[in-house]
Amino acid sequence: MTEWQEFRGGVNIVRRHGDVIHRPASAATPAIHRLLRHIHEQGFHGVPEPRGFDSEGNELLTFLDGEVHDALTPELRTPELLHSAATLLRGLHDASATFRPRSDDRWLLPVRHPAEVMCHGDAAQYNCVVKDGVAVGFIDFDAAHPGPRVWDVAYSVYRFAPLQGPDNPESFGTPEEQGRRVAAFCRAYGPGVGAEVVDVVPDRLQALIGFMRDQAAQGNEAFQQHIEEGHTDLYEADIRYVRAQRDTLRAAFEVG
Image (cartoon, rainbow, N blue to C red; front, side, top):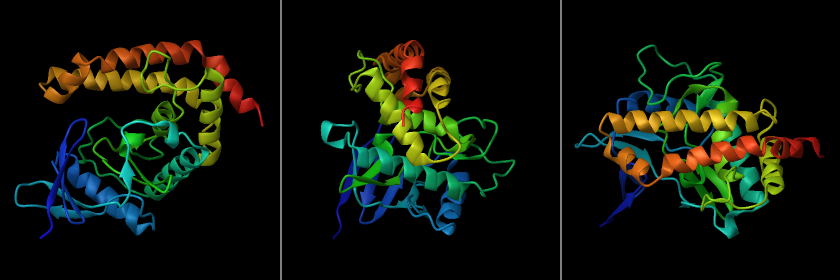
C-alpha cells in the first residue's frame, strides 16, 4: 500500500500519495488548473498537471520527480542550475502567452500591465524541482497572475542571483558576482528582459511586502508569522541594498 507523505511549505501543508499531490485549494484554483492544462497543451511539461479535487476539496496535481531545496546551498550555486532555471522560466512564459484569462478569474495577486504572459508569481528555488543539478520544473502556482515577463524574472533573480544584502542569511557573493549572475540569468532567459530587471526588483519586493501585510491584516496566520519572524524587514533591507548597488549590478550587463 502506498504511504502518505506530508510536507509543510511556507503557507500550506501538502500531502503526497503515490504520484498525486493533495494541496489546499483556493478561489484561484479553477483558473490555475485551466492555466496548467493550457501549458501542457502547448507541449511544456515542467509544471504539474491538474487532476481535479479530492473528497475534502483539496486540489490534485501530478508529482514532479526531483528535489526541491529551501535554500541555494553551495552545491546548487552552479552555472548549470542558474541557466536551466532561466530557460525553464522562459519556456513557462512562452507556453502561457496564448492563455486567455476570463473576466471572472480570481488571481491571488493583482493583474499587472502589460500582461504579456502568465507570471508564476513565486519562481524561486523553493518552488523549483531539481534533478541531477538541473532545474526541471516549477511547482506551487498559487501566486500565478497575468503580468509582464520582467516582473516574474525580477523575483527569480532576487532569489537565484541572489540580489540580497550581506545581512540576509541566504545571500552570497559580492555585488559584482551577483550582477554577473543576474546578467547570466537574463541571457539564458533570452529576449525581452535585460538590465532593467535590476530596477524592477525593488518594486517587486515592495509589492510583496504590501501583499504580506494585507494578508496578515485579513487574519492570515501564516503571513502574520512571516512578518513576526522578520521576513518583511529582510525584504526592506534588500530593497535598500539593490538600490545602493544599482550601478554595480547593471554594469555586469555591459561586459561580454
